[in-house]
Length: 338
Ligand code: 5GP
Ligand code: MN
Image 1 (cartoon, helix red, strand yellow):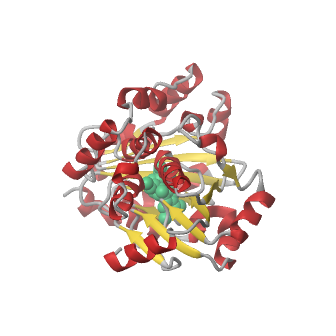
Image 2: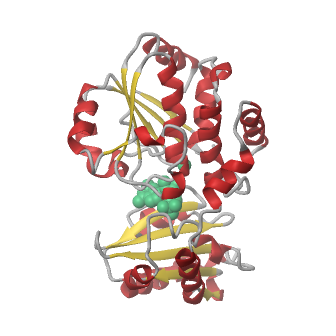
Image 3: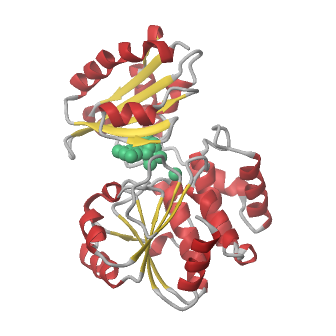
């Protein structure tokens, strides 16, 4: 986003507007954090602001300041649709293709409002009037900080805004370890702590939320972990039955895909999670180094994301999905052995 565009957005926001903030389906910490940070920031300037998510999100996010005001499209479709139709401006955060908003995509595509995209995924679509897209960024939350900075409003960051931004930077960087974590990311974090983000409390609120059944589900994931040494690859499967036996709730499998990646020499880790309700296998893919899971998922599993972290899906059975996956690996043998 150049300074000309920044000025236009500034002008747009100089009088009260009806503003909608939407994020992707199955929102994560970055999606909720960025949406609520922007929500608090815009509320300040007398705008009428509504955050709409396509569906529900994990309970470990149900404390982020302002969270209770979020409208879930699949629960409150009529209210959400009315608000979208009335919107002057729609911010789309942490995704870059309208299909990622699930069932909301048609109504979003049909509205005439001004769209502003703020996102850090690769290969952005062109639906927005103003696109702030930077795939080198750690998180959409860090981009919200820079967005506020571009508008000259860093002094308006309240503890609620600082907390919301901190959440998404922390969750999207695996607590500041992935290579998208730069010295600038750390400077942003330092400023957020100065502005009232209680970092220790935030870590506890997000990560120390296990239940016994979730820890036992983790045990099943460990038991099902397989390594394919010739491809430096590891994968985990979880069937619907295994999830049901451990009172699975949204978010319970968050981070499980990383178990495989913590094994010595493993460069590519995948988890296949059966979802009988949606009749799909949800796939999460992670890598280290040069192997692009974004490309891999785009090419084979109808997904995408980032170079080292992506998602996808399969309409085959769990075992057929794994079989397909294993059959694809020989084509990547060289890059996985570099
Ligand atoms: P996760 O594995 O945690 O669901 O997703 C990893 C990353 O890939 C996230 O940044 C997420 O937004 C992105 N992602 C997940 N599923 C999809 C998908 O189906 N399509 C695209 N383009 N990105 C996805
Ligand atoms: Mn993100």
